[in-house]
Each structure stands twice: as structure tokens, then as C-alpha cells.
Image (cartoon, rainbow, N blue to C red; front, side):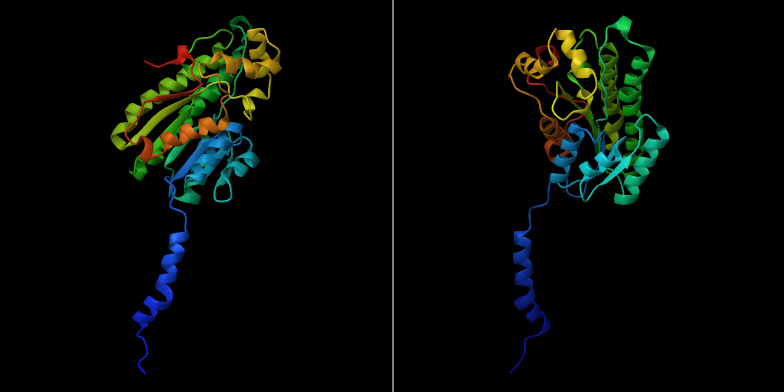
Length: 288
């Protein structure tokens, strides 16, 4: 009797089982190994984006005033960080936490937002400044820190702005919100030019009328927009559905799917400075 060698025993008893187990494992997601920093993670769109990126294999660092909501959105493998996008110190702290936990940041989704509606003569300075502080300064601060980290890493990156149809379309009684959204959009274009040499792509998703689950509709925004169209607030969702070309409702999951497109190198690795409208078709927002 001659016993098997150690190598032969390994080949017979161990390796085939390992190969079998490996064959049962799911294929790596397209964002496997990537770290995504998502602002406004605790809201409806932010939660949907966090879930979509997690399902694609990324780990999420969720950043929100609502730390509990951000933690829930980030899931068991991610982290939630409480803070304010308008505070440079708060933003820097959040990124430090993400880098400490995961080693870096590969994707930024700048999604934190608010909304307000009023005629220009009724728009207070505080309302104007609050819109521009969150939607302008906030997007600037999180992008600035993301660029610093991504350039230090030297591995490129993807920045996705969640803006609005209003960034392209002029409308009455929303000058503070719409002008701040237009600033977001042009900031993204400028950053696309700055980041190109370092492989940092910057693109924009433009939603319209995402009522379900979105926190911006929990305040007075629904009533204000309904009043703008002479509608009851309960009629607003159907009004938005009927006004777009495809006659569809826009849901948080629709925004998340488009965000994944821009976050993924495999899907959009040669795209930067672009806009993807997710609005069911609003002719005034068609880009050209």
C-alpha cells in the first residue's frame, strides 16, 4: 500500500469541492471593490441610489443630516455619517470617516437637496440663500473633497450630480430653486473639464417630479407647486404624469438606475460632462 502524496490528497479531497463552491458563488458585481459616497442618502432618492449601488457590489458611505436614515440606506456593509453638506468641516469629517473605514472613495453621488416655490417678490433672502447654500455650495464642497481624494488615489473616479429638469427649463415661481439647480449643472460641466486628465468623470442625472418617497415633497413644496398650476395637491402626481411625453410616473428607482449607469466604468467609462434626463420626456428639457 502506498498512500497518496499531500498534493494528490489535496487534488482529490479539497480542490474539487472548492471549485464547486466557487461555481455557486454569484458573479462579482460591476462595482465590486468600489466605495460610493452618497449625500442625501436618507431620502427616498438617496435610499434608492444606495440600494442600487450596493446591489452592484459597491459599499456605501451615506451622508445625511439624518444619520439614522443614512445608516439604514447604507446597509449592513456600509456606514451612515451624520452631517451637513453646507459645512466644510462636516464634509471633511464625513470623507475622513469613509476613507478610514474603506480606504478611499471611488464614486461621489451628490444628491442632497431641498426645494421651494414662490413668486420672485415673495422670495425672501433667506429662502434664496438656503437654496443656493445647499444646492450650490453643498455640491461644490462635496465635489472639492472628492476630487482631492480621487487625485491622491490616482485611479480616476466617477462623480454623479442629481440635479433637476429645472436646471434646463425656466419656469415661474421657483427662481431660487431653479437657478441653484442651473448652477449645479454648470458646475458639473466645469468639473468634467477639470477631472478629465485624471480620469475623473462628472455627469448629471436630471429627474423631474419624483414625488414618491422624496423628502422635498414632505414640506410645503407639494402645496406650493400645486397652487402654481391651480391644482389640488392630490392631483399633482397625475398632472406630472400627463405632461410628459411617455405619460409615466418617475420613481426613485428610475433615478437610481441612471445613477448606476454613470457610476459604472463598464457602462459609461467614456462619458463625461453629460446629462441624462429622467423625466418621461419634457421637450423643453431636451438637450442639444
